[in-house]
Every structure is written in structure tokens, then in C-alpha cells.
Length: 230
Image (tube, rainbow, N blue to C red; front, side, top):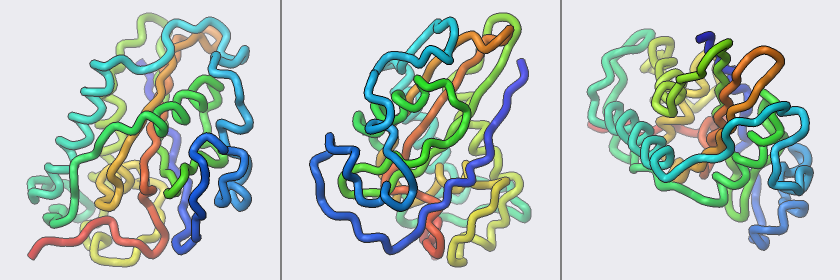
């Protein structure tokens, strides 16, 4: 199986004030006026796009959700407890403010709507009522059975820790392409995650595509990844 991770170049600008709006009124999300049209406004159908060709599976199961949460929180706590020795250089410092993530149905619905377009890029805007929303995406291809798991995708993102300079944790955040998936996973102020998933035929390839949305968004310019424990 050949797996590919699209670099997360989505950078969130800090300090943008977001008015409270009805969560279903996605066409009027204030921050989307800067970023571009909201996914739920642009794509009003919940069905997979015709560009997906033959679709095998759409959506995440309860088991998938449990796995997504378990793996994210396992990896966050690995860093928070000071047990991550990898880095460039490592080890990664302990954190005092990294909470476990919770599943957010709204984030998942938006992620699924984007996954259903079978477009392997980041969408323009996915923000919700009170928060800007970050995103990790990944895709795997196989000419046979595609056996990539939810754990495999998340661990691929996290494994960017090998390239992450631990000294950056204590500095105002600046995006680096090669570690953006990792920093979103361990961003302390992120509390919620919701993911979408689709498996489909892309030319001769059986393709699995996962989209995970995070709020409040990580990778905030000049923000802090997490607070270091003494």
C-alpha cells in the first residue's frame, strides 16, 4: 500500500473576533468571508460527489469514533506526561494543560461533507459558531484491498514528532509544513475533534480518505502549542 499525507498548510490567524451565529447558518460564518466559502454552504448534498466514482464506504462507525478518540488521547497524554523522547531534537517537554479530546458531531458532519467530495485538499472554510477549526487530512491508495486503519492514519500524522524541534514548544507558534499534523494533534487548547471518512475507487486505485476537524483550531500563529510543566 502506498500512503500519502498532504502537508497541512492551513494556518489560522489569531485575534479574529467571531460573532455568535446559528450553527446551521454556515453561509454567514464571519471568518469565512476572509477564508472562502464554507463547505456546508457550498456542498448542500450529503451524498458523495460524482467525482468519487465507485464508493465502497462512507462515514465513521461507533468503533471508528472510539478508536479516533483513543488514539488521539493516547498520543496527547504520551507527550503531556513527558514520555515522548523523539524530536529534532527531543525529547518533547511535559505539558500541564493538555486535556483529552471529545467527539464533536458538528465537526464530524462538516468533515464528512468535505470527505464526500473526494477532493484531496483542505477545504476553504469549516469554522463553527464560536471557533475557528483546524484540519488534518490523509489518503491511502491500494490496487488491492486497502487495509489502512484509523490508528494508522493518526499515527502517520503524529510521527512528524521525529522532525519537531522541542525548543519550539516554548516559542510563539510559526507554521512548519513538515510538522503541522503533529502540532495540531498535541495543541493543548484544542478540545474537540470530529472526522469523516470515505473509501472509493479513484481510477485503478482503491482509495481511503480521512478528514479530521479540530476546535478550537490549533496551529494558531503566535499561539502556544502547550504550556510546559515545571
